[in-house]
Image (cartoon, rainbow, N blue to C red; front, side, top):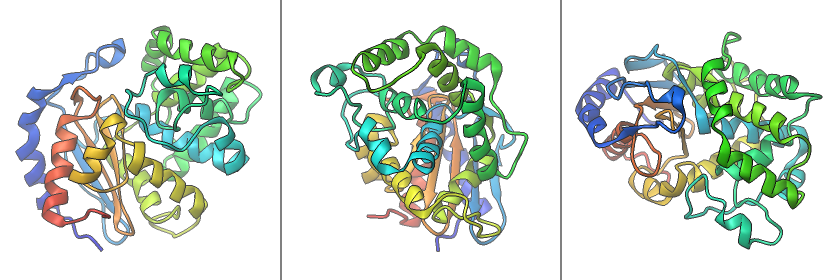
Length: 309
């Protein structure tokens, strides 16, 4: 069991705040461009003990690509491994998360993994529902279960901003539709995808979501099964190999835990059978990861020797 204290969180968050100057807030999504680099927060939700947090821990942000973990879980629960991995592969890639290059050289045009945009779009396309509203509700149902908060929803302003500027994701969708990887309406799929990325919460809720995965899919408070343990295992494995975009290998060496980042500046980390940790800092490095979040997790991981390797 890894022990993290309030002093640990406060000390390291204060220590790494300055690194926000080394990054840049995502501005290709207009609604995210207004985020302030100095807004930082961290929370730890242990499997034994009380939630602890530091910084602006009630500040709400959109989870962006962290939602890919949730939609993967939903698709696996609804359809099973064989069906999901007939649409998307299991391999990491050195290409950026938005790349179309590998789709052009692979036969069939199957995305490398569910954590890049092409793979996430293929997974979201599988979620059950007669329309986009029902599909979004399927995603929100699991998110609310994991956070134990029925009020969690998506930010309509961010969702609309992303929908209107999703030119590259539209291209990925049409390319995959041409090759039979996705089916149905591209615009309906993008409506779902941009809303899942715009799901809004704070670090306290995100840390609780991570705690469920740390507890092998069980509620950290009641031990009730929320996600089958095999589904939780698959999600955590992808987080290790692909969760930090094309910086996942470096992160595995420097930190060594399953984690998923989003371009809002959020990072969800999993400390196996110990708890979930969430960090927020909107200034990003060139790979799309939070500079404050990375430095915070690197420092704390070194101090606590928590690498799974």
